[in-house]
Image 1: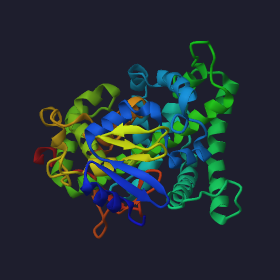
Image 2: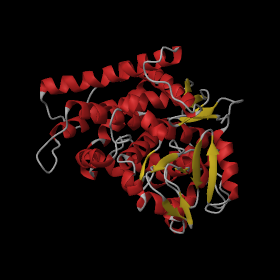
Image 3: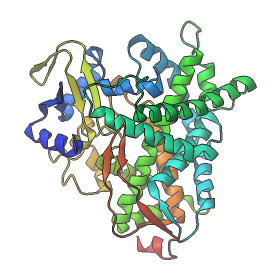
Length: 429
């Protein structure tokens, strides 16, 4: 358990489905794309979220990530109205504006902790686009709170018995204190909006207006749970994807030059808009390839509620199936030269030969991430906006070491230097 990624990678060498005892629980690691597709799209009716995911309910309550059954189906339908393509396109200007607020604070020669910088930026985006609120001043407080929460869940992964919330240990007290900080910020935003009664065209307005077939809306508790789920999930995964992209581009300067050239060509001297996303095709491929090698959600767990046949085996009720993007994305059975950073593997003529579930950074089936299109739009617009203005150069002597937790986080900060692209950068590409 000290090196989960290596452990799961080695286990997957034994075949597309592997019986994997971990501590006192039974797991089946499923790496075969066809098996993953079957389980997530057809077997979801006999599965529930795994124990670890339900532990997230201590922070997220009964939001989309943690809820089950009829409650999940009702909430998914209500929340989905906020993520239709037309509404996502309206968020583009706010995303780009957030990027320019970061650029206004940066200068040529500055050194940034790239993961911290991207976390602050995406926190700004989620505050503006989802809640039309400026949480920028609280970004550092929230970032520190999220780190404590993430560290707590890393410990939970390694314990067969999870202590109750009232447990008077120092780690549990830190967890409660920091979970309360995040909760306080989200509740304040909701209360302010309820008092104003305004429709600001953001996600919170959509949630307040959403009604089911019977005309009912969300309770205050459901609203809080969905908001805090989207608040946390909506910035953490995208910030990791962006930071890892800048790290990989720093290791592949020829690709970085091409991405800069595309941004300069498509955007010229104007700001990016949602309409540019379809034209920033290399930026999209670069991000997809970064999420292949470093999927922010590196493992997905489902516990069986009854016996289930998978790949010719009967998997017993109570066993947890593990679908691990980290393993499948990096396996030579599905990707040529899998550890090589190659954005061109996502060219249509090459990507079309891949099995649909050889690449699943947002999960799959009915419970696929509801914000996947939002996240890709955000990542593409932020990458193109930032890389047009700066090169991100890794300070020598560093490498990306990973710490599996709620997401696949860095074990320590990565320092990167901002450098203005030279006048011949686009030509060099």
